[in-house]
Length: 52
Image (cartoon, rainbow, N blue to C red):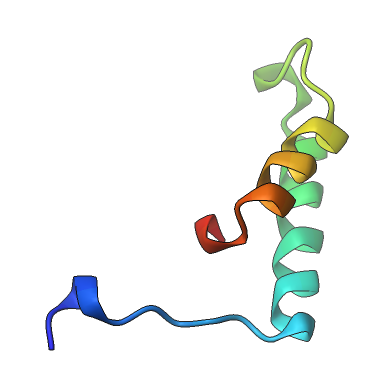
């Protein structure tokens, strides 16, 4: 099996923890994200959960 054939799925708890960490990092580095709201980022991640 190659790396491309195997996809790990996050549990709901793992997903929530990852989003919590990403949000904290996003908010800590707002100077890098001018004009971008976390809600928009999270909406994109929610639309494509495989990206997590």
